[in-house]
Amino acid sequence: MNWAAVVWLILMVVFLIAEASTVSLVSLWFAFGALGALIASLLGAQLWIQILIFLTVSSVLLALLRPLLRKFIKPKVVTTNVDSVPGSTGYVTEDIDNLNAKGQVKLGSMYWSARSTTGNTIPAGTQVTVDKVEGVKVFVTADN
Image (tube, rainbow, N blue to C red; front, side, top):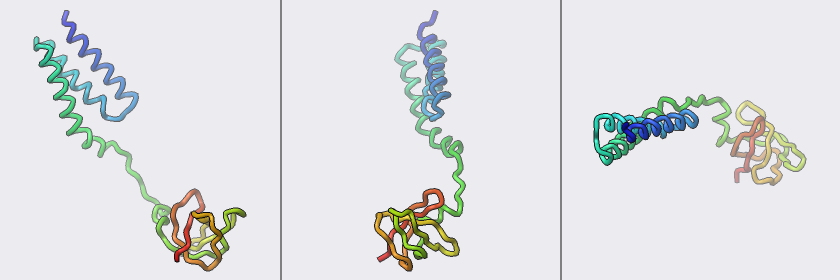
């Protein structure tokens, strides 16, 4: 019995199970490397050649194909209107007071509940810049 072939087969299965559980596109390439070494083992190659094939196939596939596949597998992020809000400017229509959970700003034609990023009170009429959006609230800082 060819024990090296059995070891390569077991390693290939382990790498495939690891890939199936993580879906990180890393273990998959090692499974292909183990497959190459398994074939070399069945053809009677020496152990050092099997290891060399495993390392070569795994590293080449990892370096060349992983970035390409990640581009196609990576989910597409659909931008929405709220993605354009951070960085925009507007003015305060109701005093912003974080302690009393009050405040409102007008950004373009939309009114948003607002909080101060720094925690300072911002009076009505002040021009502000949006730092971030959390739910239906914008966090702003006063422009100087």
